[in-house]
Structure formats: structure tokens, C-alpha cells
Image (cartoon, rainbow, N blue to C red):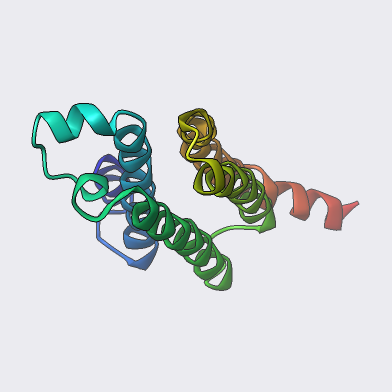
Length: 151
């Protein structure tokens, strides 16, 4: 909720951009947690903690994670369509999605936990980099395009 609170504190009201930015964080956090859970699934099973990978299994959780990654990219495309962002953040997100997906596909074919760990390691900085790129696009790219047009 910090992104929603910060956005609303700055503009003074909730709008579609604030909701979409918050949804990116919420979607990302589920994948982030699930990959940790899959890596340490035996600990969660032994503790009888009913988290998604424990309840429905690791494979189904990975498939849902693919959908969530696609959903993050869809939200970024909506932000592009409403002129909130530029292509830079979407391209970066797609690159992260492909790399994470490759590791998850390797995990599905081998069940080698190191691939889940690698996907998690890529997923961890993913959200920070996407938010940084959104900041750069909103802060610097509009003024750069205006300066280019004036020259």
C-alpha cells in the first residue's frame, strides 16, 4: 500500500493510475512469496502452513505465476495506453518476464530447486527496476522529448 498512499498523498485523490501501480505491486508480491515457498516447501508442509504451493502444488503455482507475470505486463500496457508510461518500462518488464519464465520452465522440466531460486533472484530486483524506470519515464523523458523538439 505504500505506493498507493504515496501517490494519493502527492496528487490528493485516488485515480486509475494509482490503482494500476498498486496492482503491479500486489501481483508481483504474490509471485515473490510463492517462489520462496516453493524453494522451502518442505518447511511449510511440516509446519502445516496452508500457503498456495502447499495447497495446490508447486506446478499449479508456477502456472499461476506465469499468468501473474502476464498480468503485470498487461497492467503496464494499460498504463501506456492511458499515457502514464513509455515503452522503456514495458520492454524491461518483458525481458524480466522472459528470463524468469525460462528458469520456471526449467524447474517444471527438472524440479531442480536451483531454478526456482534463480527465478526468485531475478524477480527480487524486478519490481524496483520497473518502478525506477517508471520514475525516469515520468520525470526525465517528457522533458527530453520537449528539448529535442525545440532544437
